Image (cartoon, rainbow, N blue to C red; front, side):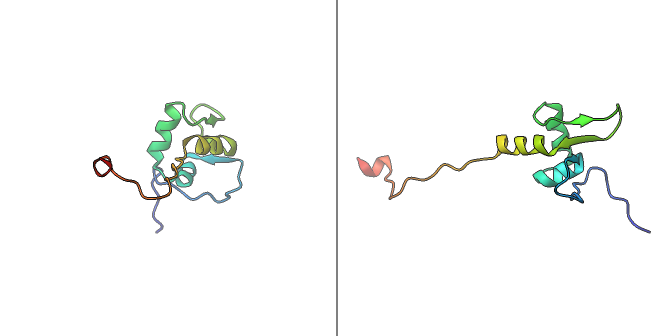
Amino acid sequence: MPTKQSPRTPTQPRDLNAPFFKIPEVAWLLGVSVDTVRRRIAAGLLPCSQAQKGGTITVSRDDLQAYHEATRIVTIPRRSGRQRSARAAA
């Protein structure tokens, strides 16, 4: 008998080029939990759509890409050369 997967488990999308993704697929793509995706939707940080009340919530590929670009962390380049501490400079 196959085991039923929890609806709160991130799931790999069947088609990575799909125009819309369900919440578990978005969680898998972002590397976060399903609850985190739901919190970000509720906070208005991640736009979503729903065809009918109580229906499946989906996130468009464009909205997901915009969210990723807005929240990605950019590293600050380090200065070249050795840095001296304030104590050593005195």
